[in-house]
Length: 226
Length: 226
DNA sequence: CGAAAATGTGACAATAGCGTGACAAGCCCC
DNA sequence: GGGGCTTGTCACGCTATTGTCACATTTTCG
Image (cartoon, rainbow over all chains, first blue to last red; front, side):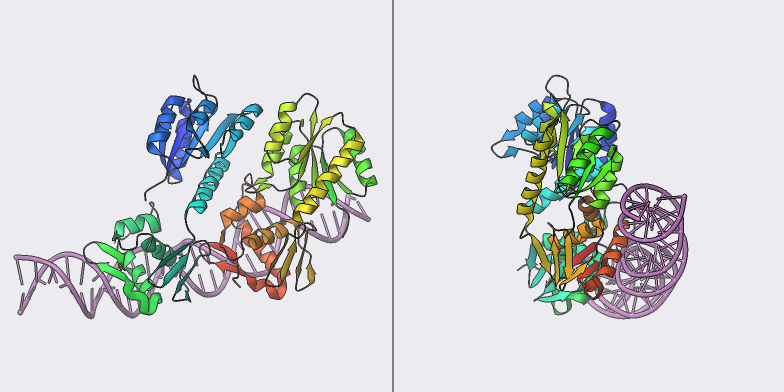
């Protein structure tokens, strides 16, 4: 699971660049389209996690794009509309057409990012089941609580994310690089063997169940298969 | 239970006076603001039962105010919009933005009072029975009152909303960002550690029960599990 | 068998994260 | 205009967490 893709459909190159800069800074993959048809195609082929859609586009406008994405239950892709001040009408139509939210131009970048993340969180929550289970280990991401055979574990934030990643890929080997990317974040610049130390700490806290974290020599770590 | 507070945001002093007179006659406490920013601040700090909001304000207009009040689940405060004749579009937008009703100027005072009371009744009904309970803490959203083991707490508006959010997600961890979004609103631009301070104040007022607000190091805060 | 490579382990210093007290600004009511 | 209340910010101190290193142990493979 790599970075989430966000599609920006906007005719003004300046704004596209601005958005790309900030979105990438937040860790998203950014796709761009300068007009409606291109946006539609990208939305269909790439299935981005979210689409930022300008309403005022030459030719095919934002609403046409929204209609093009329409299915029986809302658009194919979550949409956040960018509307110009004073286009009150537009906002209404947009929300009626199934957009998830909108932001009025000129917008505060900070607020836009917050709304983007809120929409993605909403999608996330709707999709992901709350509790991961494997070999007597249960991890509830929302409550930030992990248990082994019912007994609660006192994990630190990093240990928790590490266990979560292993659980999400249980049975599969995770290389140190993969773990660094997902658990520590892309911006982490450090020693790969830091992972080893945290695996050790995690195993210590897992106690008897520590054997479920297997070392795959020369590759990485994985949770034992059933 | 004291009188319900109603906030009037309107730039024309005459109309403010007119509204104050009639609202007080109906037994409400009236707060006034002459422009958008002042209205926003009062709405946040005083948490009135209802806000009468003029759409046409100099500088920051009514929609901006509404947007400033936006949180992840609707505006912070119920809103009744005052729109000028012919601004039909605006009404729709306002309602989409989460306003509860609108009245067209020039309005009949009688009708306005009826609508005010109607909204308050609706709120009442919607929220009655909506008492959140957890670990001896009871929070009555309708009456804006919280108790611990029967003893009433003197919470400020922010503390109240913070406790409400924690109760609504009891057991789940709330990150500082999530709390800022729901309790303070999207347009809040400030230091994330402001949350810490308010948690501290809330804990102080909770007294012996303060332990139910748990710190999850590196993540956020949560209400203790049962 | 023995060297090299990979991983486990114990220890430690740096620091991120949080609690706390204090304070200034804004706003109310008097 | 002043006093009180609320709110957001800051600086300080403490502690758990974290990343790194040196060394021990295990595995691989010539």
